[in-house]
Length: 511
Ligand code: NAD
Image: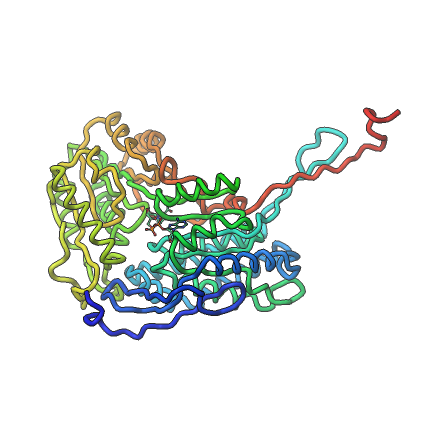
């Protein structure tokens, strides 16, 4: 769409928090769009390598300031609780902003905001209860294993669930006592900036001795990954990178990190299999598979994009699934009724269209979708980046469309009849993020679940999360874990203290 034809919406000039100052970043100006109608919603400046250097140096100084460094864990926990309260106090506004930023339905955005608040609340509890250890005595000494914050950490996030991704990195990092520089996706920077504002406000009076927590503890640097993200990864004072994004970029970051001997966590792509067994409850399975692939318009790392269905119920399942997909309400993200909003951008939609064309070329048959919607529910306009829920059959698991991550509302249905062959097909993929099983037989579910090479297995449910449960992938879906009690340790380094108890000098050197 040419700029002249774009709907007029009042674009906001957005500043960010860099090195303790609310200001424009120092690079060139750019704008972000509401994917529903392509209107410009924010005008901001991209960060530069200089901004990275400033933010990291200020973060290092901030984390060493006694007002932060001397806080006891329970005091850091109080700060995190205040951040959670700050998110909740603005929850509807943040959900609206998240919706404008990436076009997800408002109901989903409310869930993301609630989960971000819950993440800070959870890590406040972790922070307050995390224990160093006095290890068993093995000589004339006492040994203590203690934990210290790693330093300044970098958080690099994608566009698909910004506030949740950012909270999952910020909360454990702050709980551990680190400072954080965030590089949000260029096209969805708003929620990281708002989180920084909430953290900045929450810091008033919460530092040691009632001082303010240093403003430079958290910076947000919007802009290009190849410039800002790259400079962040390479910076010598950055002691860890928490990355969520594509596998190729993640591998590049891992290579740079190896040179610095820097720990990284990589939450990467997926091509998740869902299995519908012969004894599955069809109603549950149909609803779960629809949700697993088409919620978030399929723009989800855990989207269940390969569905293996037992031949004994394949036809009935297919009929019900396709009817369900056709009935999904695609439309205005701001309507409570909408189940699928637009895709993130016209560029991303073009990529999905290429995959669908490839699927057809590879011999796949379209059961529904495969096109932009003709009529939309509610008041959605044809200017949004919409795409219909799309289901293919007739593709082998080895087809390119079944091997690669599409990151859109495209599902491949694949019949199976034998468990050993099923497991081999499910695992025959470079990714290993998540999988789903629909069966009434729990022993069978456990057997399949153990055989699936994925970081998460959902049984008779899909895409449900607990902040208390670790999340992450294996194979090309990444390494390291977010969420869960132990994830605070990803932001800490262990130090061992030995206290000599011997009342006599060391006999080796005693004369
Ligand atoms: P992306 O890899 O293109 O970008 C992710 C982030 O990395 C962005 O902030 C980007 O600017 C930055 N980046 C790009 N190049 C960089 C570089 N050279 N150095 C440092 N940073 C760089 O991914 P995307 O398109 O924004 O997101 C979609 C991908 O994210 C999908 O593959 C999806 O599966 C994955 N994802 C994974 C999870 C998970 O938890 N496993 C969650 C959400 C999304």
